[in-house]
Amino acid sequence: MATVPVITIDGPGGSGKGTIAHRVADCLGWHCLDSGALYRIMAVAGLARGLGLDDEAGLIQLANELQIRFEPDHIWVDGDDLVEAIRGEVAGAGASQVGSLPSLRVALLQRQRDFAVAPGLVADGRDMGTVVFLDAPLKVYLTASAEERARRRYNQLINKGQGVSLPSLLEDICARDDRDMNRAVAPLRPAADAVLIDSTQMNIDEVVKAVLDLAAQRGLTV
Ligand code: C5P
Image (tube, helix red, strand yellow):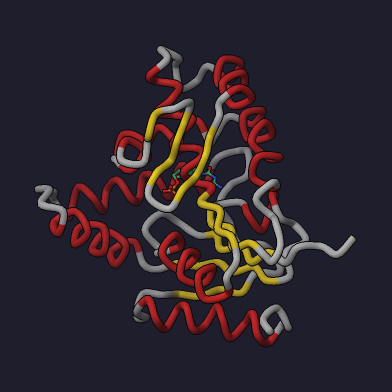
């Protein structure tokens, strides 16, 4: 059976992984997995059902039962559209908390691997190249300085009309980095065979081109 090619894009929050993954997937006509959305869904759906974010058994049961369907502008979770609810800072912090539960990560493995469907998949997250898609033929580790990532997030929120403070965003980003990089299970780190891209001085088009060039060099594109 021919294996489905997977490009993994891992990196810290705010590095632009999601945007880059979608753009690369669109250019190649491949599927896209936003694995962070799954962890965000677990946090939001768990809280809505009265579960504690440290209730590993309860969250595993929820992970096994939830009906989740991704559409371009909607994320249906047991009939509710959570596309907006999972984007907030509470969902992000909650995702980071549930993401540190080892058995919950195992419970979500198959759901993530099921996204690898022909003609190919671009998967973004923290452990796509180190755990979920170990055999991916192209692994990218996308990063940017914490200050630049805070500035990007600040601009996004200001454009949405939300009042925020840059120093507090920077503090949140550093705290999330610390949790994601130093947790015992699936810590955020580049896979040994990942290509590092530092996007601090690059725009989105430049990063997309860099990933597509790498894909072409590895014979993944026609
Ligand atoms: O990428 P995003 O900001 O949506 O991820 C939210 C949180 O979910 C991350 O800070 C991380 O703690 C967790 N996560 C994870 N593993 C992934 C993707 C996200 O632990 N593959």
